[in-house]
Image (tube, rainbow, N blue to C red; front, side):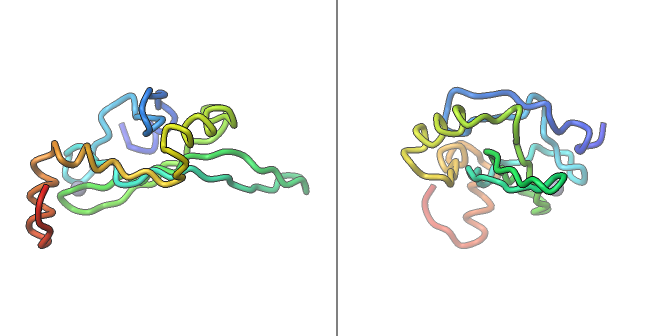
Length: 122
Ligand SMILES: [Zn+2]
């Protein structure tokens, strides 16, 4: 199955991430699991039939630690609602941008990549 065909199969989480894929999000090239790099709450504006509409959106950026390929996922209504958007902002202590650094601490490949790039610590 191509990665594009899986979009939409996401579930809500109980943590600050808000959504997680309901399947293994694999890099099409390397066949390894993609890592959530950033997750951003935003409002999008779209015009249809001359009427513009603003709606809540979650923009997730996933990256492959091996080849650095980047994927963006936009979670929009009906999966995202204004109520859930506000709930996520609360879970993120008022920050729109969420960076899951705690997840990275547990990941050996990411730790090695950070070391290779010259970052200290873990
Ligand atoms: Zn890759």
